[in-house]
Image 1 (tube, helix red, strand yellow):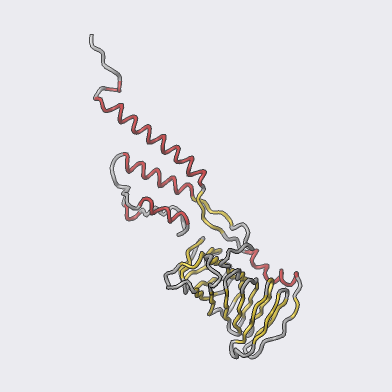
Image 2: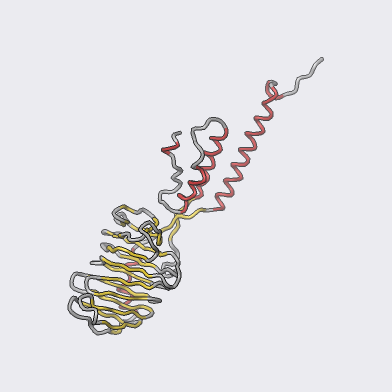
Length: 285
């Protein structure tokens, strides 16, 4: 077996199981004898321990917050974490057209700073940002069309659309962008809305209110009912998101099996080392 062609791709995604492939990188599966066999058994063991499960509570947010986007939506993410190579969060994908920097994400992937996330028809994505200190700043731009559900949590989010710049912290909001307007519903907390063409025009919008912004003006906040909010965010229920985890119960059970096999191999080698046929003692007359 060629080591270069078998990088222990335990799971289909570059997620938690992929990180465990590093355990075996110093070894080669084309080694002869029992060592190669045992390593192969351990590789299969880890593969069997990986499983895909649904995200349970999609309304729960870590300190870093999250963004969920509907189909036909795209934007670029900038974080004050540092360089382009800094990992700022994890993307969970649904559908065949969820892309991270133009590459399809099948289940999940790590998101680096300044990445562009987009979805096509019948696809959705969720980006969970790494927990960070209260001074974290997240900026979203090139958000020109589509729908986004955002929970800023402890991180300051600045979301720029074709018409407005939205500033949110400890807030939950829904944003719908078309060519002519941006519609925002604030579900929790409060946000500041700034007209993109004229930064001197701004307004604060509190929970249970919506607002519409065009290229020329900021509208007046209006109250929204629970039913109106539900109708606006119901698209989230159309997409199921998953993550890859390791089932340690399977790992432990498999490890016991591997240990038994290893013990049997070592025992058979010890019994066969004396040079006697079939392992039976020879008696002299």
